[in-house]
Every structure is written in C-alpha cells, then in structure tokens.
Length: 205
Image 1: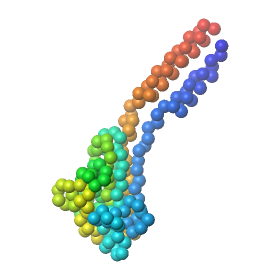
Image 2 (image 1 turned 30 degrees about the vertical axis):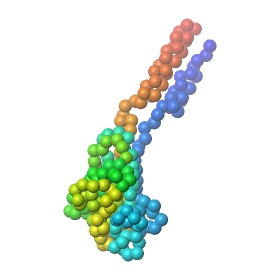
Image 3 (image 1 turned 135 degrees about the vertical axis):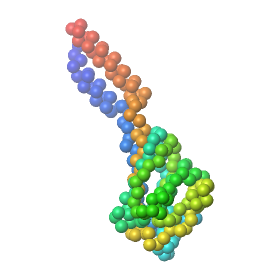
Image 4 (image 1 turned 120 degrees about the vertical axis):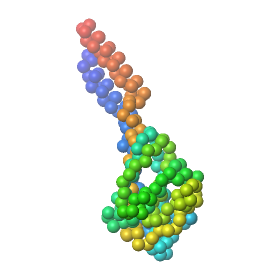
C-alpha cells in the first residue's frame, strides 16, 4: 500500500477545517450632515435634523458592536485630523434605549479636544457607541446615571463641525485569546493518530 500523499492531504484538510481567529476590528464613519446616514438620530433620539449647522451639530451617530472576550478595547478617532468633526464620544453597555452609560472622552474633549485614542476594559457582550460634535454629551452622563434612551444634551456647537465627517476605529480582543479551541485540539489529535498509523504500516513494509 502507498501512503506518501496522506500527510500532505491531512495538512491541507486541517487548514481548511480548523477555526480561524478573527481580527474582530470595527470602523465606524460617516457625516453628521448626511441625510442618507442611517446611523444618525437627533439629540432627543428622534429624527436627525439638517436645517442649520447648529441642528447638524446635535445629530448623533449610533453604532452597536460586540465584544466576544474580556479585555482592553481600544477606540481611536481619526476624523478630526482630516478636517472633520471635533468629536464627542459616549460608550454604553448593551443596545437600544436601555443601554447604560459607561464613559466618554469628556476629559480629553474639554481639555485638548480633537482626535483621541484610549481604551476601556470590557466584558463580553454588546455595546453601543454614540458619536457627535463637541459637546453633545448624553443626559445620562450629565445626570450621573441613566441610559441611552434619556437622549443627549443638545449642546453640540456648530463651530466644532468642520466638514461634519467622523471616523472611529475600534479594536476588540481576539475571541480565541490565543488558546486552541476544542475543535482544533480534536483535529490535531486525529492527525496524530493518522500519522501514527501511517508510520506503523510503513515500518511493516
């Protein structure tokens, strides 16, 4: 019997079947003055407004993302450097109106302003990001408690709009966390058995 091609075939099969870790990165971008931007809501979470720059400055872009493994999640704003919005960022735990306020870029926004880069230690679950112009903070933040459904302060400043463009990159922990998944371990075990059988028959020839 001839088995010389089996190790190669087995290796190819493992590459095809073994679970692959995902980079799990998100990029959220758009314009606060774009009526076609489906992420937008008004500061009261009703319809976004576009009549004046003051109204546009109080539009909020809402995005939900998922964290699969506990760890540091990084948030990097990139829009302001290209002439876009001086951003106000808010983070909520969960999705929908009941999502609870977690934090914001408040200290950075009121000190230096512009783009930012920082991280939060987050547990697995869904989270919601709100992006607006300085200083349209959530009412939950200004009150010290509450949820996304309470809306936003409406203190966005037209002078902070720039081109109205925003961009936020989010990097979450690799869901595999560097550890082999059970399915991968099973496949590696089977590979070892098959290779052992091949060596046994070769030694008997």
